[in-house]
Amino acid sequence: MTEDNKNSQLDEVQRQLLDRLAKNDSSGFKQLLGQLKGGVNFVDDSGMSCLAHASFKGNREAVQLLLELGADINLNQHGADYTPLHFAALSGNTHVCRLLLDAGIKPGAINSVQRTAAQMAAFVGNHACVETINNYVTRSSLEYYTQVHGQQKEPQIPPTLLKNFHSFVTEINLHPVRIALNVQSLGLLRILSSLRKTLALMCEKEMQKSHDLNELLAFKFHYQGWILAELIRCEEQFKAQHKDKPAGEETGGEANKNEFIEVFVKRVLKENKLGQLDYVEYTIRECAREFPVRECTIFRQIATQLSASAGPPALTVLRNAINGMRGFVDESSYCSTCGAEKPDKKCSKCRAVQYCDRECQRLHWFMHKKNCARLLAQSQNQSQSQPQSKGNIDTAELREELSKLTA
Ligand SMILES: [Zn+2]
Ligand SMILES: [Zn+2]
Image 1 (cartoon, rainbow, N blue to C red):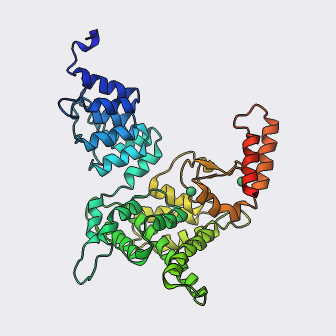
Image 2: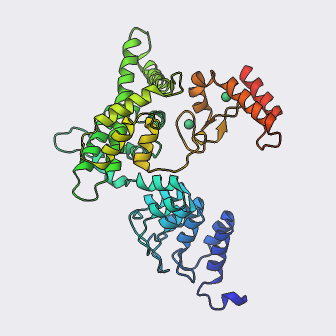
Image 3: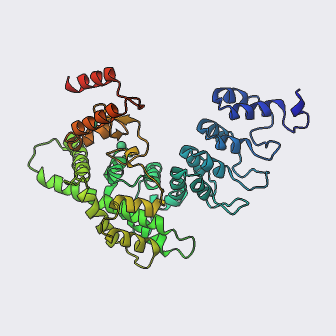
């Protein structure tokens, strides 16, 4: 045994386990877990639990494993009252925040300096964590809508869709395209109409609360429901336009469902000559006007900002009102199609716009094809004037991508 371990309460396995976490050695951590004698609920000499350490490192895999092994989310003896969620918020890892919230951690718990986890995240600029925590509702609070009440013959949301309904409600990205794509990928298209009604009801219920009322969530539910109503309208228009089209009942129906989503996405992404999204501007204003409660801060804030001349885009107003101001935001770090943050892919030609994946790129191409060449010329001019600049285009890669596109 080495010098510094003499006074430690930790046994050798516990000490090594924390050491692996500190070094982000997930596989080593995993191997050692099996050798623990007294289980995962132990604290280090400062009173910090193993789960708190894993959360602080933003180690998703370790947090998941610890929770599966029965880690106690309330275990802490360090006196500063930081919950694992406070530590996760500081780490900046939204997945870890989400795991802890799903495990039932209380988002409103305050530490010894009276700060919630979301406030700590905001303090260090981890805005995605702020949004993940502030947008969270428990899955059990949604169970009500999967049950039969009063005169109902069936629940508004089939119980089998509870998990997906929960994912839909807790999404932090408010872009109408993301909402439409989520409805599709989460298998909620077939309950579009009852999903819309449920969200309206959730908004109403939130605003009627006598305590813990969350205006932001109420407005968000109202907005999500509003976009669903727009989707439904789009579907009806699409059906009316294509009713003469011969199609097999089953397969034709499915194909049409996907087609109207594309029509909707294009409607949303269609820019005017100034590059503004007319439909989004109009729809968000209409949505705000129809918010059922006028006497509340969020309504006044949104209404004032939307009526300001030369204000920010409506989607930015909405995002800031619901998720909080972000300070400096680099708009180019969002997916050009669905508004997701830090997307992985770039347009291989101009490298000036970013996308989550090929699907997002495909959906935006009808708009982007008009600008791609101009953006490429722009970035070439820039790289000529700054020959040393990083991120120069790999011409071999570009040629390969171009040949793929023209093939
Ligand atoms: Zn995207
Ligand atoms: Zn491009």
